[in-house]
Length: 211
Image (cartoon, rainbow, N blue to C red):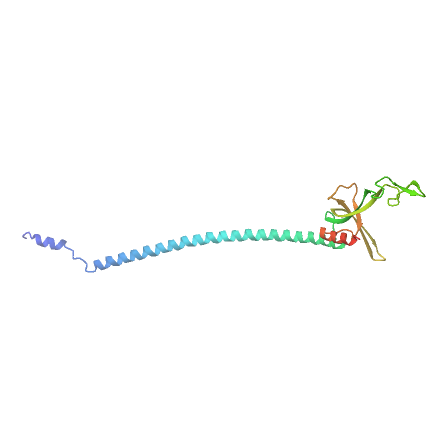
């Protein structure tokens, strides 16, 4: 049989699929869509991780705040009980308790030279033409006079004495104040009503006592 080269060419020739370009385009679109969806899923996953981390931090912060509030509540309860007990004592003791600052009226006598005899204790008078020395009637022969001076002073409640009488349903409270506004060798003592919580209250009482 004679050699026919064109016949071999025809046997090795493959006809192109008329849908090749369409299929290629479809595959490209599918790949793009898959890549897009995978990218979105990865993005959603990362965002979910961030939200989870944020939620965990929020939960941790809330727990810390709850613990802090519980501690503050416990402290407030203890303070309320302590202050309540202190307030009860103050009400029973006229508004005071040990360690409180209190104001009181201080009374002291200052010696002043007699303005009549100038401290000589006696006066020279003329009786029936004769000079005589007599006891100064102004200072009664002491040469000086004592002047009462009152002032508003403050101190700290150092001791409280309480006496009760069950039958008479009476309560007696005496307080001892250690002066802090001046030097003193002993404490000042007085019954309820003799001490004041503020300087203004004390000065008001002081003005009442002035003639």
